[in-house]
Length: 398
Image (cartoon, rainbow, N blue to C red; front, top):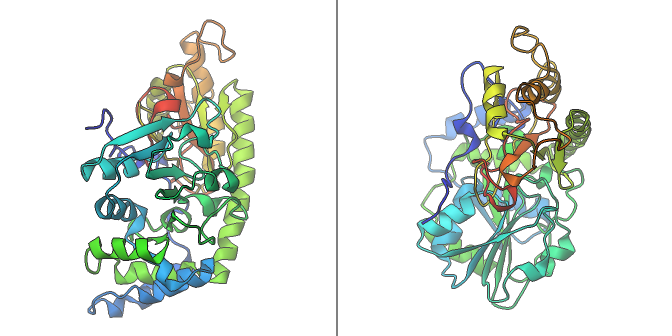
């Protein structure tokens, strides 16, 4: 049994009237072209869904054989299928990380060993026990936003071991560097999600890329028709070259947003952890949970960071002004409460300085902050996984 609530995700933090910086979805609504394709498919809802065209589209998108693709109801279903179909003797989850892989493994009755990355969150292959026959790692990881080199991931490959790489946020990194999705490597399973980039969390659309033998095992335990007709349509549409080009533009815009956010946080004396490459960052500050509550009072829903194995960050939307700017400069709609920046004012109120004076920094004070150029469904200041403990030893949720 886990010592953390592995099912507490960012959607529990949102509420009416709050700027959503807690959920990892970039767009407030799907783009017009995608909504049009979904609307056109409504007349097909009387028929049972068929995801074969979606699998073919994914295969073309990544240069893989269609037998190496399984379309799923989001990445979360993929984790459940893996936990159900596989019988690992020694399962390892590398943390900080999204919590669903561990949750799925434990729900299926498997024991889980956590490998906790050090303060720089750099993955070192030797930290993973040689006897591990099933290893889960995120790239980029959530909530650290650290992007592991593909060579480091390949160094984890062993005979008799399955390596599962969660690339749910990799399409938010320009050029998708360090991806293993287009490489048919022995024992490597790659999981992708369409939820974050295209604003379709409610559709549940994702896929698995793996050896045909693994795909056959997963398909055998996948519930019939688990991928809906509309989800399958979305997978086809979002795999086309025009959609990929649009995703690249969004990812490039997120780089500028992240740079602005990081600069603003550092100007406030707040420590940004690791080398963020995704559309979110992880920060450390005193009494992070109280800061989260103060932000909530000021109209921002952010994710809390508690003691967990992994942390999942949110993505960007297009607010006016952008959410990351509103976070740093305080919402004008509540001037009485926001005469100063919420974070810096809180530190002053508590007589705490952000340069370490009178305060001993600790992982307990880590917080994850998403970068974003889009509307209320990103996440700026979010405490790293979901409790208020070590970022280096806490899990994460999407």
